[in-house]
Image (tube, rainbow, N blue to C red):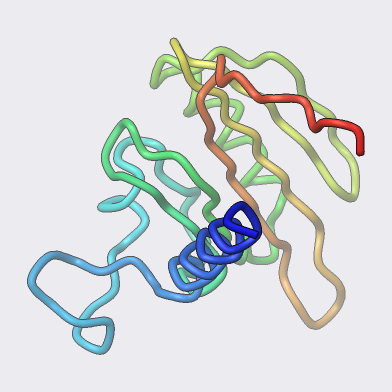
Length: 147
């Protein structure tokens, strides 16, 4: 019972964090939300993208943040793809894998971190979408136990 209660408490705390947009210091959510550059340091988003803080989950800041950044990529998803391929290696990231298609995927590593970029082309009305996920590279993940 204790285990279930603690699991539910953790899930509630995480859900609350996910629903709260990142803030600049000294202000409330209604004052000013953090720009992606403030939140994720040099791992900036391509020009023309619109940061979606309500769908993002950023833990930490600067060059050591982890989490998920969600953005609208605009109409030119190809330019966003080229941005990551050209810019991230210049920032010290190593391109491990890339797949180009209607949904493109890029995987980068840098020291003890991994970055995954997912770019999806949009339709006639909406632009493309971008999801940037950064996590620790060698995080030990416990395998789930069988019941």
